[in-house]
Image (tube, rainbow, N blue to C red; front, side):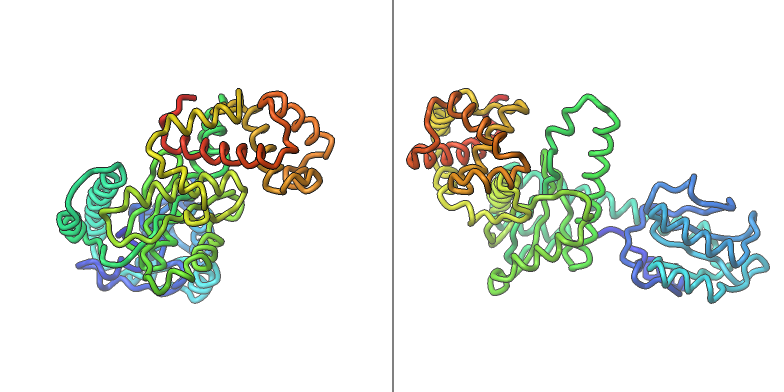
Length: 405
């Protein structure tokens, strides 16, 4: 588990450090200790630092301490530790504690007699050890997701060695940012880096969300998706949708995120299957424009997914979709999205146009173009059924990564 602000006084030798304000911020992950010797903090912070204020090289007024807390919050530091009991900072003013409480930012008091070299060594060692354990856990789970074969008994023993409790049923949650592939393929490096940063931020928020709920499983990256293991109980599974909906609402609101959820699984020996289900579900969540999508909602698509002869499915797609089949260029993608929305609204052009955010005449023009490409009239209900099935199958085949662009 990552080292949180709340864990600092529990580390061996650091029991004399006390959390004096900002209890709401005590669940933030500590990335690294940093001793601040400058008047301001902003230029030196990257996020996640536990900042130590000694007052030795820089006299700290009450106003300066308040400002340091505001700067730390602005730059997403983890918390601040103020050394007291010396001629430099005798005590923490009440107004400084009030600012920390108001902003929900963890504020600690450390006796000056506790050597800083001991404090930073203990914290740094704890962070390094946690990172090593975390890497081992991620490697173990990643191998399982990629189909690494082993007996359930050995998997259980390895999970126990890593401190993972795998005795509860669980679902796998897959998260995907909208437009992942398209944005990463753009030529603008600044936009690519911005998107990578957004994904990293989403991963951090998901990790914090799991930690707040007492879930000690790490967030995994698998191609374009973030995967999280969500333990539950069989009795609780009917409420899982409401629980996940509320949890996802806590993520960054300006990031458009889609989520897919697997069926409940009894143990880690089936995690590869669960991860595949979750990624199928999030693919359809993106296609349908639905924030949360469960694998058991796929209906007939689950039958297509169970057919082992992928060539038969691919041939059916090509017969129905013509040149649009497996095409990923922007225009083809747009036409297939138009076709999908048109069928989702049972051929109602007005509703389909509104859902796409386009004029009805634009929709009509696109539908005529689609009819030309697939050589099939869209007013035939049986043809629409075949086309809808073909679009479902195409998404399944894309998800299996055995179709060339």
